[in-house]
Image (cartoon, rainbow, N blue to C red; front, top):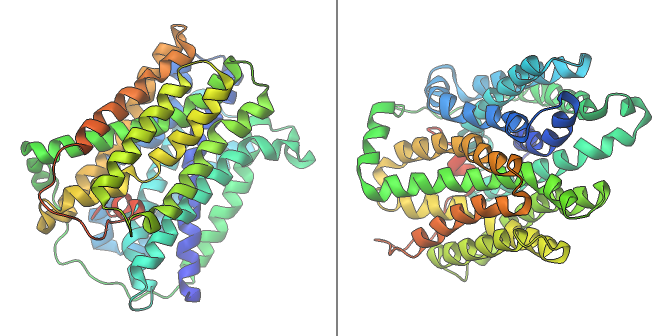
Length: 398
């Protein structure tokens, strides 16, 4: 591994910080006396940034360069984390900071995938990109643990739910300096993707259904991150156990599943793996609806492994339909990340109406659609799927 790839790997690690906003929502809900729908706005403002800034970010990368866009994303994230590190903001100010975090993370993902090619040794790009996907998953898992674990330190104990923000800020600042010192010879893009041309692809059913699948998948994943912790508590687990077997375990298994995904697909076609993953995710969501602690833990395990590789498999299968339009398709799929903003709002409404564990009917419905989509035949056989990070991050995009 070349040393010049390390700052980029660090940037991928910090992309996972935004995933901590879902698990943090329960503490924010108690702090500000919010409904579940209002607390879900934390993750809403992160994900909606993908819908608004993914394609503009790709256009910016082609004009100012990928390294500058990466620095811009790290700088925006550092600013977003600094405010709640220094003060206890009002809820409106907190949402503004979270929205900035969403914008910065969007730019990190826009720039991260293509710049990895620029810093990788010849022949190592795919391997480095797959590894970066696992690194991002580790960032999501670590961020989720830190939300609760860091409050045990005396220095941060009085900050409550805000205690993880100073550490996240320091890491963003370190990454900013590391990337700023990095010398990169960037590859150039002849023509950036256009929004109009991308949207026109939605007129073809195969692409419309795939983009809808990404929308629902991301929405289901965000719903799990937001509601696993309170759901585990509602079925009788104490706070520590609920934290360990809820979102933290879910994100850990997402990471493990993504690291294992490449090996699995050496012996299994992407479409077969897509079908099995969708079925496993569906079963996991159904187990969470039972209200049983044992079934809930089993459901988290099944869902974590089932959710892990839906994105790269669906992306690669879809791109094989029209590989010459890969950039535009990638842009559309990244805008569909906005499902992480909208779907949890619906689940939050069900939770507020007293449905508790039964509210997991929302991710179950999302994965029922994905299972149906996976059963559709494909025009081509895909030999090498594009990693999730590759898809999400190429706003080429990504």
